[in-house]
Image (cartoon, rainbow, N blue to C red; front, side, top):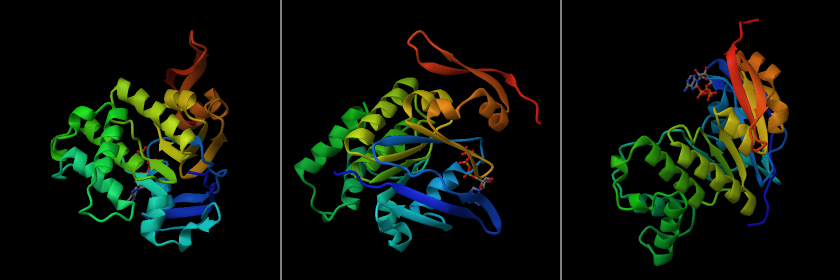
Length: 266
Ligand SMILES: Nc1ncnc2c1ncn2[C@@H]1O[C@H](COP(=O)(O)OP(=O)(O)OP(=O)(O)O)[C@@H](O)[C@H]1O
């Protein structure tokens, strides 16, 4: 797929009822081939931001993807361009995993429902393999654990061929192996397709080491936006998260954040 984008967001305001949550956000454009980690304290507006981009909640903003004005697109097309994956998927889906994946693939293309082809099945199996969950193919979705459901949700999202992928805490229920495997797969997919990937992360060490950029929200406003090591500084961590922290380097040379205490409110 040729590079698409950038995804440009200007003067984004969004909220619920009369309560404004996001205040005039104009981050730097999101470019294809890069992972941007969206982070910030609980309630700072990260999910609201992603949902506003995909059109799931109303917002006022100028939103463009390449030359296309997202506000002019029908909601289904906008959601396909900016595919939002919520943190938790419904537990009650009564479908085998493999069929749920094939249904997701069909939802984004012109194929009709009854056209289940071998290549579709192989495609779905390949995604399961890449996420190390091939053994789940014939399990019913309703019997999966939270983390397994999260992995299948991610496989569904990736197989829908989005232009930009908006992932809301996709690692929150995953064990260490799968956290790392998912991040590595996202790096690969983001660069090769290429994709515009925005990912909500609470683990700042993953953001520091595996994202190309960090966008830090605080109380519905942009606190910092740039290279991970430039955004995640001790000063910013104290101001935004109210912790005393410093950044160290491990034997591999990779930076990691060490928390040493709680900072008082200023
Ligand atoms: N459906 C809703 N109706 C009313 N208020 C909402 C709704 N969803 C979220 N909010 C409020 O909007 C604010 C931002 O919520 P949001 O879920 O975007 O935060 P977040 O940064 O994703 O938080 P977390 O890290 O805890 O998931 C919060 O104060 C929350 O209470």
